Length: 288
Image (cartoon, rainbow, N blue to C red):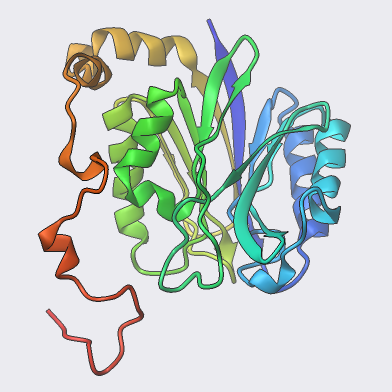
């Protein structure tokens, strides 16, 4: 039986300040309480909050502190994300840190939450990484999951588990819960969507299985979410269908189509009729 235990930490943290000491304490407590933990996943931008002014180069001091923590505890550690400064650009970047304290990958969020996450550049590469003898993992950040191509592409690249740090404090959280389940079932993956609580987020983290089943859904307060992932079950689901029903990855493999939006130079008359990507204001706001 191939299993792997991930703890999502839905932490109540402050915004626009250094939260590392509090985060470190909670990660250490999680490992002490559940010594079998293999990985800890934190919310998006949890270390400093949502202000790009805290951006640092990578490698940098903030990332190094997490590397030292991963090495100390002997765990895989995904510290949500950090704003990364690279020349004139700022990215929303998630480091993937091994139990040896090494950064094995960095993922830059492809879809910043525009028109609100301003001044942040888009990443251009999908990222997967292997936990030897266990599974291939993929990572996406918050608004990425609103675009089904992201998780589908990660599954196409071999990911069986999608790690999804998020930072949501708005009323669309219910939509995100539905999207997590939809992405999980369409791609027959485990999907761990971990949000913050407190000043940063509304909580309601969710873990969904490869049939879209809810393994756990949190409330709105701080919570430790340890989940044992059964990779044998996932692989059986991919082969036989969830409860012996749909096998979407096989159908996707067996029916390759040149979908119109992805052709070189493709344009959509319908989408081109939409206005610019800007915040609503009294001049262009209409209520339905």
